[in-house]
Image (tube, rainbow, N blue to C red; front, side):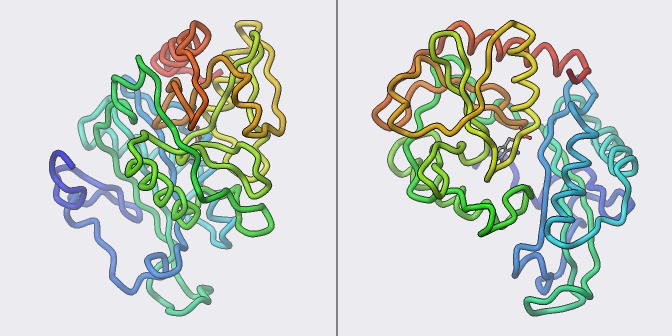
Amino acid sequence: MNGPTFDDRDGFIWFDGALRPWRDANIHILTHAMHYASAVFEGQRCYGGKVFALEQHSQRLIESARLLGFEIPWTREQIDAATNETVAANGLTDCYVRPIAWRGSEQMGVAAQLTKPHLAIACWEWGAYFGEEALRKGLRLNVAQWRRPAPYTAPTRSKAAGLYMICTLSKHAAADAGYDDALMLDWRGQVAEATGANIFFLKDGVLHTPTPDCFLNGITRRTVMGLARQRGVEIVERAIWPEELETFQQAFLTGSAAEVTPLAEIGPWRFEVGDLTRQLAADYAALVRGGNTL
Ligand code: PMP
């Protein structure tokens, strides 16, 4: 880990309605979220002073909390404004933004009806999620042992902290085996996504991507689908089985942190960092810096 730890930095964090000095943005150890993962979060990037797709991220945060049974006591507009205020207070124009909402410390045990919901927003400079080299050469993924849970097993449409437990385990196992990240299958054995990004494949000029029925239908995913359509590229959302991976020529990940990152390999399968992947990465970079959503 380079640089200061995340609790020991200069700057400001928006915390329950006001900016606090970074090091004072703390919670008590007996916080429900800490014990029972009753927390939801967002991750978005600010480009040239404008947070890309801010409204969509704030709205998803609100809905993620509702899926966990709690209501964030700020409106979408208030969360948008608080986000902009946080970025400005830190003097940043290009950064990653992390809003998080969680249940407080009024109650201990599984039940949480008496807990108060909280909201904090932090931001910091964060370059390419997988590093600059990955953007040129493509990432190497293994196939995770953990599978995305079925929608009747977990609130899979929520960007809930608890759902990342198997992502961290998969990411560590991938790193231990010398890979950059892991491809996660879903509970049926179909291709789902990476540990923090959606996945696309190219075959004979057509893009294929798994139907998001048990994982996040990412904001970047939908944006890149729009960009591909603008280029006249056909997109098929469907069930994709791992056996099919050998038939694809290109593959890439999409995510607010990952942006558009090409893949070079997944387990035994190889992909080229090809023209369409590069084109969509460039289109996405231009769109987010242009300050508009599609
Ligand atoms: N899946 C997972 C597990 C993620 O963490 C993310 C990043 N939020 C995504 C997909 C992509 O979502 P988005 O494009 O909205 O950032």
